[in-house]
Length: 126
Image (cartoon, rainbow, N blue to C red; front, side, top):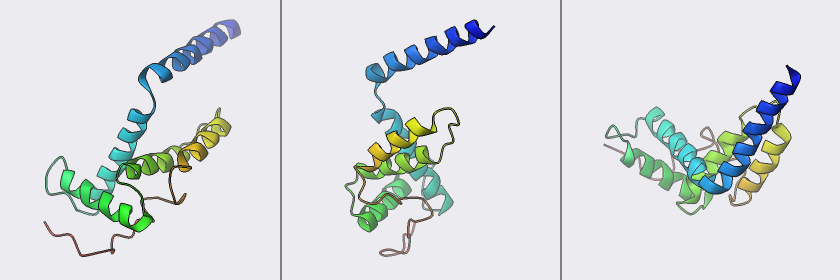
C-alpha cells in the first residue's frame, strides 16, 4: 500500500512540474488576486453591477494610490497575500519561499484586505 501511495504522489508531482511551465502560474495568481478584489468590493458595497467591475476598479485605484503600485501589480500583491495565508502543512517552506518571491514585486509586504484604507480620496457613490 505504501508503494502505491508513493507512486500516486510521484505522478501528481510530475504532472504539476509539467503543467506549471505549460500553463503558467501568473494567470492563476492574477485570477486569485482579482477574486480577492471582487470580494473586497462586495464587502464594502462598491459594486454597481453583478460583475462588480466598477467596484473592482475603484478598490484597485485606492490600493494603487495607497501603496504606490502599478494597476497590474494590485491583483498580484493581493494573490501573494492570499497564498501566504494558505496552510500547506506538507509544503509550507516551499510556499513561503514562493510568496517571498511574489512579494518582491510589491512595494509593501503587508497588503491585505484589512490594511486597505478605503477612506482615501473621495467617497465612492453609485
